[in-house]
Length: 435
Image (cartoon, rainbow, N blue to C red; front, side):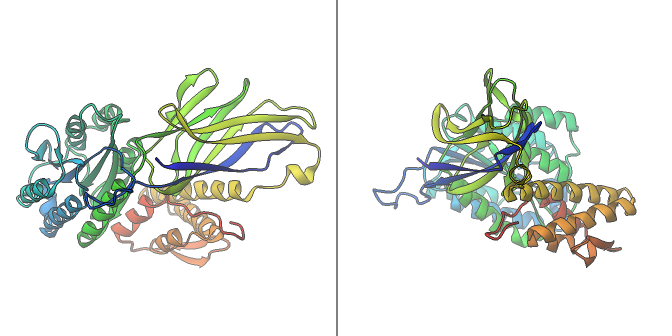
């Protein structure tokens, strides 16, 4: 069992008439699952039951160039080797329909040397041909996972190189609604002919990650990392349970590190004053959340418990954090900006202006694109987000990062633009000296 801690960063002081309370809550989980197989020592932590499905696009475009389907076969074999003994697993080949590659019927197989070798032999025969219908792939994965989503860690990898042309956006959304809560899914796009917003929608709904694999040669290492992370999960499903007092309203709840994910619309009522937000599975890791709660203003000196945030797995409370407010007429106290809140407000704006700027660039609106991407450069520079700055420099010429003065590059590789879009929601934390 993992142990959880929660730390709150906020300026508790509000001015007279102040009604908005902001807080950053850092949640840390220690004690990930044991990743070893049967050779693990007797004292090793027993990992939770788990299931893993690898979904590989085998549409016709995966054969152009031929290296893509070959790299996909090799990466899938690497991933299979990383699945620990006893984990239920399977492989799906996706075209305009979904085909169970291993096992070729029924549910999942438990990983062992024998079953891993059999699965790799089946994967070695994969050939490219057909269309792309991601919703059908996910539907088959949900059926293969079966009815045990609540008592084991269910995780999938989905790889595609193209757009979801064989079904409508509405059809995909309906499938995602049926899959939500049954399994998590990390999505990867290889090459530059897939749609970032489409895979981001899948990953967001299914509490996974999305990224680009620009070079098929990098596929195996990426698959290995995803499986190793999945094998290190120590919890099945953890939720943020937020209680607020009478008269308070939750403006938003966002995960802000390591990536930005808006959880506001995922709220599920527990009772009249309490809601829960799903966060998925956890290993040994740390995540930051930004909570904004509106309350009725009070008098000078009044104190208020604005929110109680509990980390829960089922009905077990794993940790707790308190969010408070104190009203004051001391401007030095009420105007002090908490650096964590300020930092992540800037990181959220950074993601927004990158995506807005790229959309404007695609639409031919160079003036808006320049302004938005210039602001992105400024925010990345201020926050020390070197990774995002490097991605921005592939799209714009930076004249002055401090003022956000940039010029759009005339020639930009599709993979560079997609990498910036895909990774726009990755954030950095505040440094010891401030953001």
